[in-house]
Amino acid sequence: MILPERLYNGDTIGVIAPASPVDMKRLKRAIPFFEKMGLNIRLGKYIDEVHGYLAGTDEQRLADFHDMIADKSVKAIIFARGGYGTGRIAKDIDYELIKQNPKIIWGYSDITYLHTTIRQATDLVTFHGPMLASDIADADFDSLSARLFQQLFKPAKLFYTEDISSLQVLVPGEATGTLVGGNLSLLISTLGTAYEIDTTGKLLLLEDIGEEPYRVDAMLNQLKLAGKLTDAAGIIVGDFAEAEPKKEKPSLSLEQVFHDYFADLQCPVMSGFKIGHCLPHFSVPLGTSAELSTAEKSLTIDAGVK
Image (tube, rainbow, N blue to C red; front, side, top):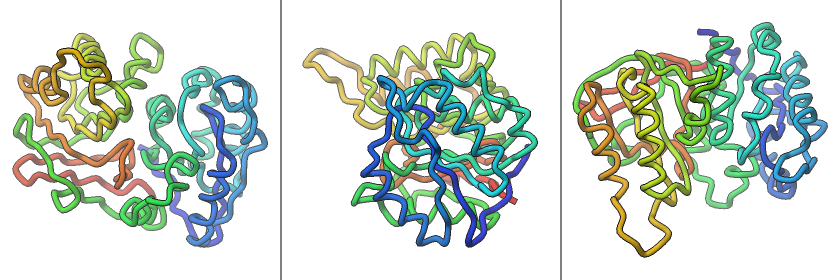
C-alpha cells in the first residue's frame, strides 16, 4: 500500500477528463470550491476536447493523464466527470510513472476502472469521491460531501455510522480488509481482462446508477459466478440511484435482488451507505484497511494520505 502525500495550502491540483466530454460552464462553476480551500487549479490541455462520446481521442486523454502524473508541481488529480472511456486507456497507462510519482487521484463512476487498475498495478491508494462538473457544480452540493475533501489535508480515520444514513444488515458479522470496488457495471467490465478486480479477503464496495433491478441482478450474478462475492471478506452496498423499473411490467425489487445474492454469503453485508451517485456522497479512500461491523452498524476506514 502506497499512501499519497497530503495536500497543503497553496498546492496545485490538476483537472482532466479521461472519459466523457465536459460541460465547461459547469466545470468553471466548480473551480472556486477548491480555490476557497487555498488550492490552485491547472486544467488539462485537452479538457475541452470532444470526440464523439469521449472527451478527446484516447491519445489526448492519456496524454493529459500522464502529463499531470509527471508534473511534480501537481499534487493531486481530481477528475472533471465520469461517463464512459477510462477503460479504453487502461492498457496504455504508464503504471511505472505512477509508482515514481504517487499522488492523490480522486473520482468515481467510470473512474472505477482506473481505481482498480492503478491499485492492482501500483498499490497506490486512490479516492472514490465527487467530481467537479458532475457534482460540485450543483447548487445543492451539500456540506458533508464538501467537508470530506478535508481528508486530503490531514491523515485521519473516517467513520460511517447511522448518524449519516440508515443502514440495513443483510448478513451479520464483522470483517476487516482492504477497501476496494466502486461502480458495479465498471467492475463487471474488468472481468476476463488483465485488470480483473481482485476481491479476495477484501471489503467490496458496490454502487451504481440508472440500472433497473434485472440489470443489477445480471451483474451480481456475473460477480457471483466469477467467485468475486464469495472471495470477499465483506460487502458494502452503496447507493443505487434511479434503479426503479422503467416499464410497467413485473419486477423484483432491488431489495429482493440483494437478498438473492447476499443472504447466503458467509461474510457480513450491509446496505444503505450514501456512497455513489447521491448526496451526500461520502468519499472514501480505496486501498486502505477498513472494518465493517454490523453489530455496531459502522464502517471505519484508515486514512488515505500521509
